[in-house]
Length: 173
Image (tube, rainbow, N blue to C red; front, top):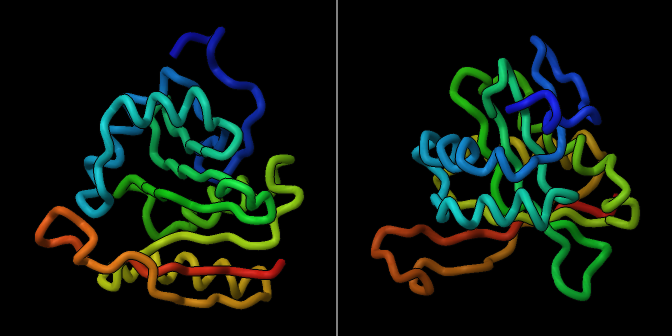
């Protein structure tokens, strides 16, 4: 990444990890990060480029030594500006267990685009206990409720081995 394209509006996390909005040039690195998690659904590289270009206000990256080590994608559901939906949270194996996922979420919630947000939603599969812990921990940190509801049953997915996706609704806050 050239110095000219490097964002200057960064938050420091720890160990020189910078948290910032994504730029289009991050797209391929984000795709590789998500692929390397081997847990998250891998979307097309085009999808990550689009998220960086058109949803940068609601997406977050963590950068360490010019490598993307964390990524969060989110959006405001249509006609629901009081909600933010977290699509994916990916953390590089080298950074797991250090609170980076929580830092990505907190960074997003501090942004102007989330100033009117009262609820955070995401979907999580029953076997993804790290994500369950992340979002339950966020609810505890925000001193609010974490409601778990049915959302997408496994029968809705074309793949044979896709688990149910449960909706986690955190709020009000």
